[in-house]
Image (cartoon, rainbow, N blue to C red; front, side, top):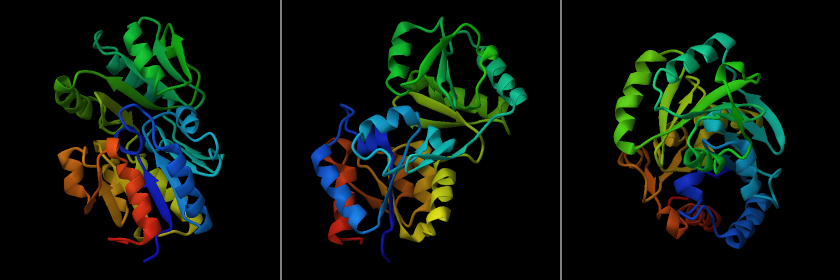
Length: 269
């Protein structure tokens, strides 16, 4: 069956460890994708305003499932955004603030927000993922449409935190891992596959006509959705178990190699 859409994660997948990619190679590939009517979609836990900076020449010719599915842009136009109720938002904030050692970013439609008391190294780290990041004195006072939270902590502490938040925020937010010490709290059901499905419905494209490429826990749903699911060589074992196909690691152009295979019609295409 003909491939009509290619969907890729960014960190650990499309981007190498230096947070770059072979731009000239990809732009040449993108021209071929356009000629064949194949949609290119970026699906990431990162902020839309960060993601578009990686594709300045073509930013409005591709689509984005940002914030792990909470925000969807189709060719430069906002298509969808999730939103917590005010009560739900305050409940989450109250739970997260119980641990004074836990620092986090609250993600909204207009900006992301971090406490003015957060350590400088965390602010610097989060600024790489959230290009619109405001410091706030009180999370409770934020006036925005809120849909996600991002936490960063040592990998060894993540399993216990995820288990705790699964229980305390059940039905309000779902914790998912995205690698590199990050845990995102997403609105249940608003994962990457949900955002992708919104685009596919508009384009009249079946998941059977899609390629998806990922490496971390927050890619699980989109890999289960797409017929051609590729795990990076650097992917978590749980992701490799989901994906039917594998590609090279993110430092050896694994995602671009999958795109090339689509264009060349080589196995499994």
